[in-house]
Image 1 (cartoon, rainbow over the protein chains, first blue to last red):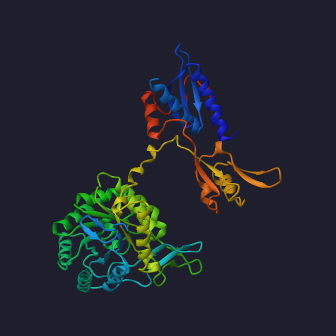
Image 2 (cartoon, helix red, strand yellow):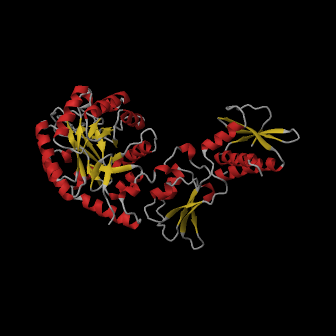
Image 3 (spheres, rainbow over the protein chains, first blue to last red):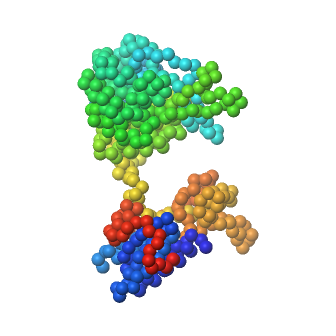
Length: 70
Length: 434
């Protein structure tokens, strides 16, 4: 799989959660990548391991959009 | 014709091109010939207790047919008595009253030594002093030059001693043989320096003769480290100039030195904060007359930019020089190969495949003709293919329209920190590996 395809796959998963109203509630950085903590308004939580550099950049773009008033 | 005059901390010069303190400024004969050729100023070869030089002294690094890509020397300061130098400096200044005559000085780190030489040199009428805290060899072993220049406290103290006695502007010349040159630049400013000049030469060994196993150069079979300069050091010098120029605690005019070989190099140093430049290796390689092209080139450049004075260039690129953490992570460029120009040498493919990100593919079209194509979605914009490409214009780096707002690493980390989570956990409770 090309680097772009790996990124696209990670982006697809992040977008899928965000489209289901999950919000980024926390990020824990480690040697394996970034663990993204996603929380749903109804209480469900999920952690995603984000490995690719582009996806680790992408979710912060999403985080900043999330923090911005719409 | 633009105005090329500069004024570096009170030292006026008809143009920004000075000869650096080095072999080209050893005598009045040389400096006067340089002024006749068009140089705007000269920093006289360093005066101090006269030394004895060795033979041989110089060596060069040639690279792929390029003569003198780098230059190495183990020559020390002036080997002529002070009185002779002073007499020639006096005569030179009298003949060329409008040119900048600055004198480089180096003595032991003692207050009375500095006071004495400053008074004697200023008494004959000079435009400024340059303190040599940078010479990396020989003098450093005696506690002078770079040995002083690598210790901020010694730089500050000696600058202060000079300023106690000096009536003319004092330029402190900095050594690059230090981790952070702004540390010594700030020390010079604390000591009262009116300006700084950088860089002096870099510790070096030009080479080893693989037949005789002698160093290059060698003195009867023995070698010692020298000072490296010439075109190869320009990027190192430019960075150090820029680091000083953008540091608010430095804040004094800069005389840029290091691998300046033509007017374009000079423009780069001016844009990065130098008020003027000093040149040595290029003059040693090609003679004093190179200054004619430098002056013409700079004049034409200023005219083409619609600038009336060279001073309008000074520091114009400093704001663009930042820290890595402030660069935009969302900015992207990708390579594109122009099929009409490409000669199919495969250099880009090999470079990308072997040493970068494996995104240049070899294809065959419907007519059986080979062609190279960048898989743009996987291109990280490293520029390597365009760097190794031997054909001008065959590979273009194209900006990708930004889909997101600018995002720096520092902004990214601040956004993550604002969430209030700890770092460095590979073992969260509930997880789903992407």
